[in-house]
Length: 207
Image (tube, rainbow, N blue to C red):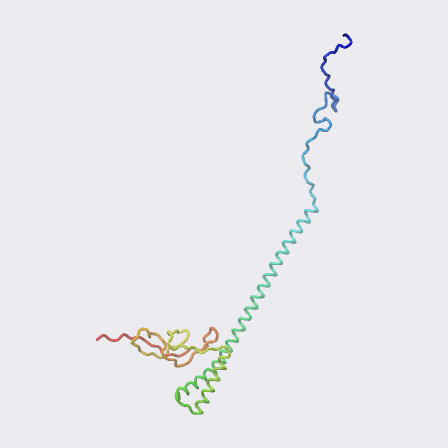
């Protein structure tokens, strides 16, 4: 029927709104909701903040320098204290050794007296031995030690060789066979070297 006739016509395209310039359709950049790419803005420089940061760094360096200076001064003070203590102890040892040498000479005199009368058991001889032993104990309480060298190899740092004894045994060569005067040591210092007799090896004559 004529009233139900349907005409197949193409749908009309939606009309684009005019661009901002009024000429032509709007561009994709001008379309509503379109994202416009923009470069991030550079951070704003704050001169006052930069000055404070620079001052803080300068103060930190000065503080570190001051701390190192204090530590160095403390180390120097401790080293100086130790040097003074060592020097004072050394001087005391020297004075102690000088006083002890006087007592040692008295002990030497008593030793000579006792060596002459080694078998004497009279009250006088016993009294001399007691005096000698008492003086030796007093010397030893100051840290002084009597050297024991008989049978040991001769060491010129500890003793003076004042006599010699010939020996036919090569094992006895340069060994101390007798002590003529006792030697004494204070800590690591020889305050008086001993006087000793040293053996010297002589090969036996061939027949």
